Length: 383
Image: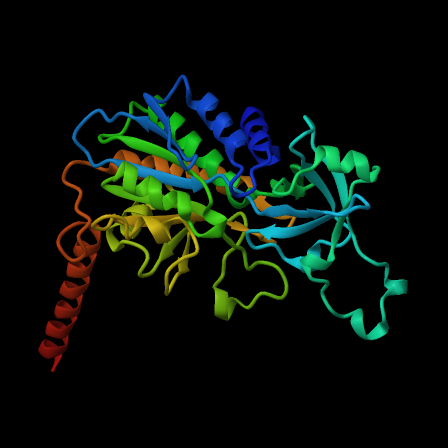
């Protein structure tokens, strides 16, 4: 990944955007695409839709990724100046004690540094030491007088993990909020690449959605409002390439071995086959993930919007999801951009997404049927 693109990724990751507070990242997306997209709109939910007009009559394609990250919210300010909090999204209480956090206080221009406090082990009874302290029993210590805290902080202010982006190892990177601001980076880069490539046949919409972490809410309204002919959600998925993860249960998903293409009932079979074909055409290594039920991604909402939208899901492997130390391989992000650009460019006005009625998936099934019939004839002749 080139230095200027790493800088842009770092900017997205380190800009706070807990669910319901995505405004700052939305501004970055609008500014980034202002000179490239033909049209940019922000809906009342806060999702950003950047459109690149097509050069022909091909189907419109929406590529969605969510801007929000998990975090905490202030629920109470004590008379002593300590903050009580609740989770915003899927926060693991076990990782919180001892963390440094940033409190985005209503009456402070800069974030306030806080620490998550808990009784030290010396003061915890032996039979309680193995228990995870619930979030509502933790406090945020801002290290300042109570009067000052109450002047700056309001109930409802949000809090993010106090860590940022860092490269390490061999082409690896660690940060909070790769889930899913890595996706925001991907969708904007795909739009930019398509513009340079002469555009797709149909319109391309980069949809930076909100509130995915509490129920794919932004994707629901974005899909309804944009009503694309076909859509792909981009998100992160669980890497299983480190100790303690059962591959027989969760599959083999490896950082650095390319984008992950989901397959299952939440995924249109034609979109899946086209994604695989695009990866093969570009010589991009890819991985397949089984999703036997509805996915916990924007694809979940997009697929069943209006009369149904043919939907795909592409991810990158992510280690340690929903922690302050999420890890990805940067080459997977670059490869994903190439894959999605090729997918978009290959869409033409003859594309069909109705399962079983033409297109890549049907051709493969027909070929499989022909092969079976041919084998049967050969066996009959041999007898």
